[in-house]
Length: 233
Image (cartoon, rainbow, N blue to C red; front, side, top):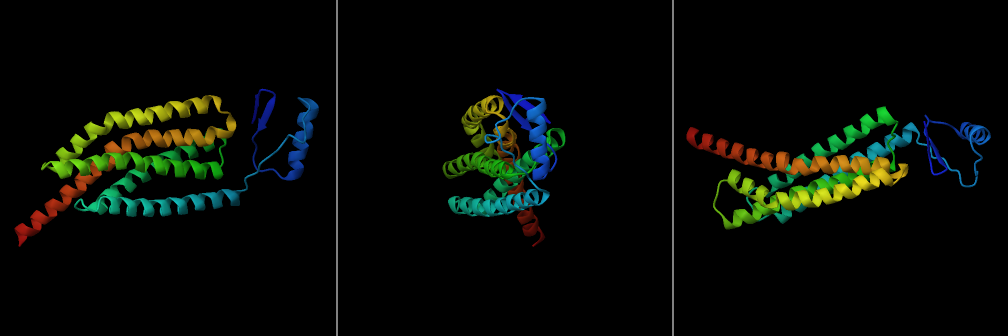
């Protein structure tokens, strides 16, 4: 597949060795446009490299999840069951990663995208932005819990309403910038920015529609078990 832009050519093929690449450059130079061999470059991603990047991404996600979990647990240590806040934030983050990875896989089928260092960078960026939005919501829940004596459902709903405008405004500003980069930034940034954008869209609603409701349901389920245990005793 070829793409011409501003007298620049980009050709994406299946894995090719050095001889095949040189033959392709020669044929392109003779039949289409003279090429500057010194300015020309080619990158190859072997299946083993793609596997290594995928493995590195999995390890990075596990390490990042552990660090985020410990950070949230420590930051919310004055709140009852602080560990649950971290687990719910991680659950929302994993949802976003699945959405971003699924998008990348679909684009691999449609556009021939391959797993490389940009994929790893995009996944780690999605991790950071996903957790950030969940922490904003949970932090407001913590503040309201210290000032008000209300059921958790009411606290979470109040907290979401208080931060939703700021959260959406921040996320939309970043999305507008990424959309501009996606449209005018060139093919070299396309995979990274598109995957990041999909992960950010997913993270915007997961902190409100997944992480926070999961926390409420977990707390309510724990309270129901305690009441049932007391009734049985």
